Length: 229
Length: 229
DNA sequence: AAGAGGAAATTGGTTAACCAAAATTCCCTT
DNA sequence: AAGGGAATTTTGGTTAACCAATTTCCTCTT
Image (cartoon, rainbow over all chains, first blue to last red; front, side, top):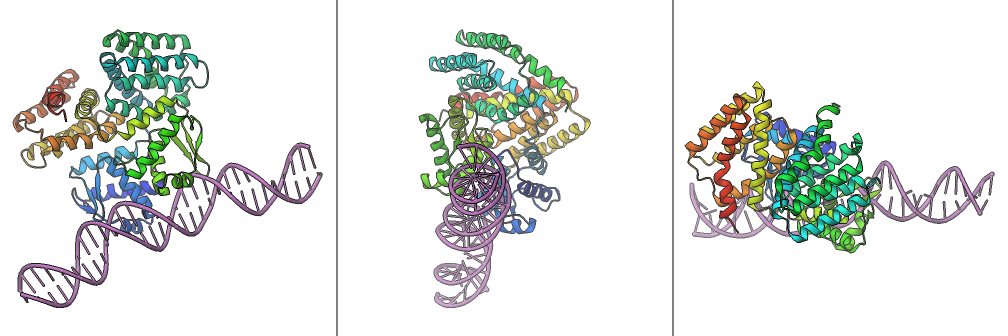
C-alpha cells in the first residue's frame, strides 16, 4: 500500500496527474511522461515520482511496464479522478466512517468465525482472551483488545476481511488514543468478550453478532455524536 | 499500498522480520536494525529494505522515526506475525473471499447512498449509467460497469467504504478478465442498474439492497462453486 | 566524581549516477 | 523504395554516494 503517509513531493506528483486527467491532456490508456521528464517538469526528485507511481499502481490507476513506460488504466476519467481523490484523503478518514466500517467488517467476520472456526482457531482465541484479561487496566489494554478481535477476524477464514480490518486498524487506533474512548468498565468488556467466545464455540452466529453490536454500541454513538472535530 | 506487487528482495526483508519476531529475537516495541545493517545482512539493497519498511508502516506494523530508527508496534507477536502473513499473501486473494467482501461493502454503500445521496450525486450516477448503457457489448463494458458501481459507492458518503472498494477492485477485475464471467445478457444487467438507480432516487434502501443482491447472485455462485483453482 | 559541552558516529531522507532491457532511429542491403 | 538489422536513445530498475538531524560517547570543567 502504498504507504499511508504522503510526502509533499509525492502528493505534488499525484495531484499533477489528476490535473492532467482533468484537463484532458491525459486520457485512459495513454502512456504518461517518463519518470525523469516528469521529475524535472515538477521540480522534484525522480524517486518521488517513482513512489507516486507505485502508489497509483497499488490502487490500479496506472500500470508500469519495465523499460517501457507507465500507462493510465482503461477507466473512465471520472472514476480515475475519484480514485485519486480518495487515495489523497486516505489519511483523513473521519472517525464515524471508520467505526461504521469496523463494525460492518467485524460483524461479518464473527459470523463467519462462528460457522467456520476450527479447534486450532479456538485455541488461538482463548489465548488472546486470556492475555486480554491479564492486561486489563494496564497501558497494554487497547493493544490486547485489538489482538483478541484480530484473532476472531482471522478465524473467519476470509483473508480479505482480515486484511481490510488490518488496513483500517492503525487509523482506528489513532482515534482511540486521541479521544481516550476506552472508558467502559473493564469487567463489562471482559464479560462481553467471554460471551462472544461462548457463542463462537456454540457456533451461534446470531448470538455472536448481537453481543458484538452491543460491544460496539458505546463507541458507535460516541463517533456519531461526540467528536464533531 | 503499498504497492501490491512484491519484488523478491522486498519479500525477503519482510519474511526476515517475521522470522525475527517468531524466534523472539525481536519483541514488540523493539527498535529493529538500521536500514544499512539489515541491507548488508540480507544481501539486498538498502532501497529494498526501505520499501519493505514503508509497506510494514502502511499496515501499522512498524513506525519509522527520521534520523532515529524504526520500531516494532506495541502489539502481540501473534498479531504482528498474522498481519505480516496477511500482507504477504495480499496478492493471492481467492475469488470467493473477494466477491464476498465486494457484496458486503457494496450493499452497505448502496443502502447509505439511498439515504444520503444529494442531487449532485444523482447527476453523477445518471451520467455513469448512460455511459454504461452506451458501451454495452463493447470491450469497455466491464470498465463502465465498475464506474457505475463506483459512483454509487462514492454517493454513500462514507470515504472508508469507497476507498476499501477501490482497494479490492483491481483484484476483482483481474479475476473477471481471467474467468470471463460477464456472460449475463446485457439487457438484464442494464435493467437491474436502472432499477437500482430508481430505488436510490426513491430513497428505498431495502429495495436497492434486494436488487443489488440479485445483481450479484450469479457471480457469487460462480465464485462459490466454479473456480476451485 | 559528576555534569555539561562538543565532536564523532549513526540514523533515515534525498539525490545522482549507473545498468540492462526495450523502443526507436538510421543506414545498408535488396 | 521497401525491408532488415545494428547502433543509439529512452525506459524503468538498481545501486551508491551525499545530506541533515539525531544520537552516542568522549573529554574537559567544576
